[in-house]
Structure formats: structure tokens, C-alpha cells
Length: 77
Image 1 (cartoon, rainbow, N blue to C red):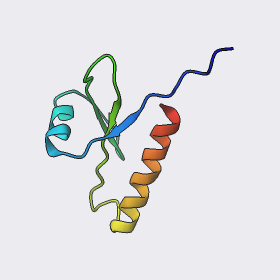
Image 2: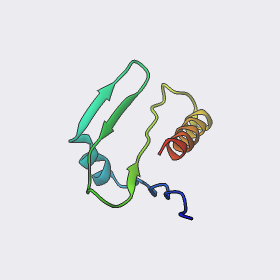
Image 3: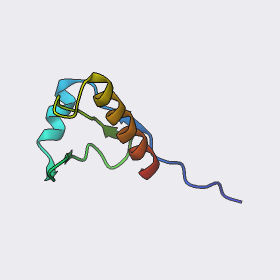
């Protein structure tokens, strides 16, 4: 029996240089969210970086939104 395929590892983007690298890639914008993506390499982990402006709410609300989006990405990927 073969084991189910392992989900790719998600690495959080933490440094400004990492966000700037992604910024040079593809972009899709909607009224409530903007997604930017750029392929680093064919193999390896997936990078995920989230930012939330103060328009989203106070710090507690922004952090909750980021946690929910991180978990949604984890389940989708």
C-alpha cells in the first residue's frame, strides 16, 4: 500500500526582501484582497506571506484574519 502524497511544506515569508521578491511576480487584485505570487523553484517549500492594513481593524482583528488565512492556505495546499 502506498501512503497518500504528503502536503507541501508552507514556509512563512518574514523578511522584507522576501516580500519584495514576490512583489515582482504575478498579481491579482479584488476589492477586498490582493494576491501576489512568484515561483521560487520547481521543487521546495511554498512561501506564504500575509499583511493586513489598519483598514482591516485593530491588531487583534488583523492577527485573527492572518491566522485564518494561514490555516485556509494550509488546508488548500
